[in-house]
Image 1: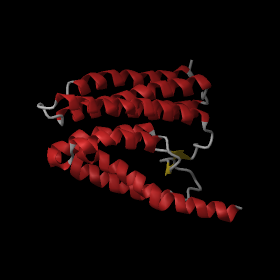
Image 2: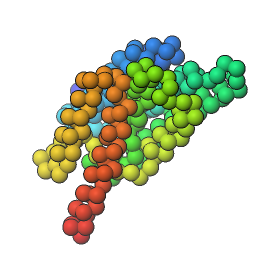
Image 3: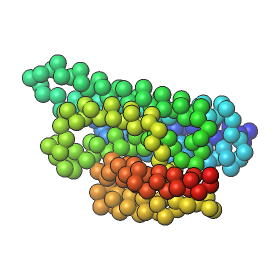
Image 4: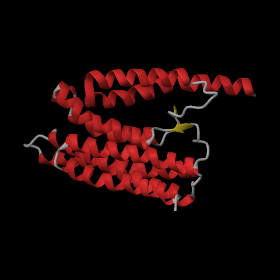
Length: 236
């Protein structure tokens, strides 16, 4: 009976994505943030519960990815789709086709999750941007625009964003994971990231979400990979 708990939490992750979709289509991005935040919590708890209860299973892994495709693939696709639509000039309705590029994010997320399920090397870190991180980045865009004005972004940049995100998710770039172990050589890096993220969210609230993910990628590229390469050289 106890082994049903992780799967129940996974299903709650999926179910929270449904009102997130509804609110995104209605341009109610604050409500979207609430429901997507719950999906993130349940996504963390299902894995935590499975490990704590010793109930990891192939079914749980597949179910988790299926839920994540909706929560962290479909939801951010719709958020960016609706944002793009607000940048389409009314006098050029043909440009509305550009907003459909956002749907590619869902496909990229599904492909990334499929690769993740088959890749045993992603236990202590990530290869490519994780789908929850990508979803957080996209979710932050409407709040960034709300705080700084529409002029800070343009249609061309937003239309290019899905291509960049799809590539980043499915690249071989190594990014650190927020997992804490006794012999953690990157504890200082994770502490810096968490501190700067907390400060950013404190001052800028939801408008800081995209910045937090950019910070995560930046710190991983600048500090995480070079250190890891050196360690591999020493061990060899």
